[in-house]
Image (tube, rainbow, N blue to C red; front, top):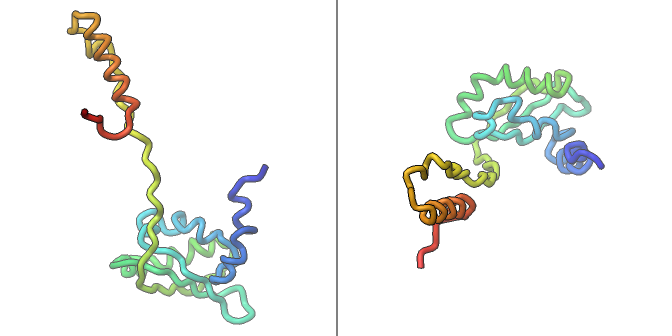
Length: 151
Protein backbone atom coordinates (compact mmCIF):
# COMPACT_ATOMS: atom_id res chain seq x y z
CA UNK A 1 0.00 0.00 0.00
CA UNK A 2 1.19 3.52 -0.81
CA UNK A 3 0.25 6.87 0.58
CA UNK A 4 -2.04 8.75 -1.83
CA UNK A 5 0.14 11.86 -1.58
CA UNK A 6 3.10 9.95 -2.97
CA UNK A 7 1.12 9.24 -6.16
CA UNK A 8 0.43 12.91 -6.88
CA UNK A 9 3.60 13.58 -8.89
CA UNK A 10 3.00 10.48 -11.04
CA UNK A 11 -0.72 10.96 -11.60
CA UNK A 12 -0.73 14.73 -11.97
CA UNK A 13 2.68 15.13 -13.58
CA UNK A 14 1.45 15.52 -17.15
CA UNK A 15 -1.32 17.94 -16.20
CA UNK A 16 1.02 19.99 -14.00
CA UNK A 17 3.66 20.24 -16.75
CA UNK A 18 0.97 21.32 -19.22
CA UNK A 19 0.27 24.37 -17.07
CA UNK A 20 3.91 25.16 -16.43
CA UNK A 21 4.45 23.34 -13.16
CA UNK A 22 7.28 20.86 -13.08
CA UNK A 23 5.63 19.16 -10.14
CA UNK A 24 2.58 19.73 -7.98
CA UNK A 25 4.48 20.78 -4.89
CA UNK A 26 3.66 24.45 -5.33
CA UNK A 27 -0.02 23.78 -6.00
CA UNK A 28 -0.34 21.40 -3.08
CA UNK A 29 1.48 23.65 -0.64
CA UNK A 30 0.18 27.07 -1.75
CA UNK A 31 -1.58 27.55 1.57
CA UNK A 32 1.75 26.99 3.35
CA UNK A 33 3.45 29.54 1.10
CA UNK A 34 0.97 32.42 1.40
CA UNK A 35 -1.08 31.52 4.47
CA UNK A 36 -4.76 30.57 4.76
CA UNK A 37 -6.21 34.04 4.11
CA UNK A 38 -4.28 34.72 0.90
CA UNK A 39 -4.72 31.10 -0.23
CA UNK A 40 -8.49 31.60 -0.07
CA UNK A 41 -8.26 34.48 -2.56
CA UNK A 42 -5.36 33.43 -4.79
CA UNK A 43 -4.11 30.43 -6.73
CA UNK A 44 -0.90 29.84 -8.72
CA UNK A 45 -1.74 29.64 -12.42
CA UNK A 46 1.55 28.77 -14.06
CA UNK A 47 5.30 28.94 -13.76
CA UNK A 48 7.22 29.89 -16.90
CA UNK A 49 10.98 29.86 -17.36
CA UNK A 50 13.12 31.53 -20.02
CA UNK A 51 13.78 29.09 -22.85
CA UNK A 52 16.26 26.40 -21.83
CA UNK A 53 16.59 27.55 -18.21
CA UNK A 54 15.24 26.39 -14.87
CA UNK A 55 15.91 29.62 -12.97
CA UNK A 56 14.60 33.16 -13.30
CA UNK A 57 11.02 32.07 -13.90
CA UNK A 58 7.80 34.04 -13.64
CA UNK A 59 5.09 32.74 -11.34
CA UNK A 60 1.64 33.86 -12.45
CA UNK A 61 -0.90 34.00 -9.63
CA UNK A 62 -4.61 34.56 -10.16
CA UNK A 63 -5.99 36.85 -7.45
CA UNK A 64 -9.56 37.74 -6.69
CA UNK A 65 -10.71 41.17 -5.63
CA UNK A 66 -8.61 43.63 -3.67
CA UNK A 67 -6.16 40.97 -2.48
CA UNK A 68 -3.89 41.63 -5.48
CA UNK A 69 -2.74 44.86 -3.86
CA UNK A 70 -2.03 43.06 -0.61
CA UNK A 71 -0.16 40.25 -2.39
CA UNK A 72 1.86 42.84 -4.27
CA UNK A 73 3.08 44.22 -0.94
CA UNK A 74 4.26 40.80 0.26
CA UNK A 75 5.64 39.66 -3.12
CA UNK A 76 9.28 39.49 -1.91
CA UNK A 77 8.29 37.18 0.95
CA UNK A 78 6.20 35.01 -1.40
CA UNK A 79 9.10 34.70 -3.85
CA UNK A 80 11.44 33.77 -1.01
CA UNK A 81 9.04 31.10 0.29
CA UNK A 82 8.40 29.67 -3.17
CA UNK A 83 12.13 29.42 -3.88
CA UNK A 84 12.70 27.82 -0.50
CA UNK A 85 9.94 25.30 -1.24
CA UNK A 86 11.32 24.46 -4.68
CA UNK A 87 14.86 24.27 -3.35
CA UNK A 88 16.55 26.80 -5.63
CA UNK A 89 16.08 30.29 -7.10
CA UNK A 90 13.52 29.13 -9.60
CA UNK A 91 11.23 32.16 -9.44
CA UNK A 92 12.48 35.69 -9.99
CA UNK A 93 9.20 37.49 -10.70
CA UNK A 94 5.62 37.35 -9.47
CA UNK A 95 2.91 38.28 -11.97
CA UNK A 96 -0.55 38.93 -10.52
CA UNK A 97 -3.64 38.66 -12.69
CA UNK A 98 -7.20 39.47 -11.68
CA UNK A 99 -9.68 36.65 -11.92
CA UNK A 100 -12.07 34.42 -10.09
CA UNK A 101 -10.44 31.90 -7.77
CA UNK A 102 -12.11 28.51 -7.45
CA UNK A 103 -13.39 28.00 -3.94
CA UNK A 104 -12.37 24.95 -1.97
CA UNK A 105 -15.21 22.44 -1.70
CA UNK A 106 -17.12 22.79 1.52
CA UNK A 107 -16.38 19.93 3.81
CA UNK A 108 -19.26 18.21 5.45
CA UNK A 109 -19.32 19.46 8.98
CA UNK A 110 -19.73 16.79 11.57
CA UNK A 111 -23.20 16.79 13.04
CA UNK A 112 -23.44 18.79 16.24
CA UNK A 113 -23.24 16.63 19.28
CA UNK A 114 -26.13 17.00 21.63
CA UNK A 115 -25.22 17.40 25.23
CA UNK A 116 -25.63 14.09 26.97
CA UNK A 117 -28.59 13.86 29.25
CA UNK A 118 -27.27 13.89 32.74
CA UNK A 119 -29.17 12.64 35.68
CA UNK A 120 -28.77 16.07 37.26
CA UNK A 121 -30.95 17.52 34.47
CA UNK A 122 -33.78 15.23 35.44
CA UNK A 123 -33.32 15.11 39.20
CA UNK A 124 -36.45 17.14 39.77
CA UNK A 125 -38.62 14.64 37.90
CA UNK A 126 -40.05 12.31 40.54
CA UNK A 127 -42.11 10.10 38.23
CA UNK A 128 -39.88 7.24 37.03
CA UNK A 129 -41.94 6.69 33.86
CA UNK A 130 -41.76 10.35 32.88
CA UNK A 131 -38.01 10.47 33.59
CA UNK A 132 -37.46 7.36 31.41
CA UNK A 133 -39.55 8.88 28.60
CA UNK A 134 -37.56 12.15 28.78
CA UNK A 135 -34.25 10.28 28.69
CA UNK A 136 -35.46 8.28 25.68
CA UNK A 137 -36.59 11.46 23.93
CA UNK A 138 -33.22 13.13 24.58
CA UNK A 139 -31.38 10.09 23.21
CA UNK A 140 -33.49 10.11 20.02
CA UNK A 141 -32.92 13.83 19.51
CA UNK A 142 -29.16 13.33 19.94
CA UNK A 143 -28.97 10.85 17.04
CA UNK A 144 -31.64 12.39 14.78
CA UNK A 145 -30.59 14.20 11.62
CA UNK A 146 -32.42 17.31 10.58
CA UNK A 147 -35.47 18.88 12.15
CA UNK A 148 -38.00 16.68 13.95
CA UNK A 149 -40.91 15.37 11.95
CA UNK A 150 -44.31 16.46 13.12
CA UNK A 151 -47.38 14.57 12.16
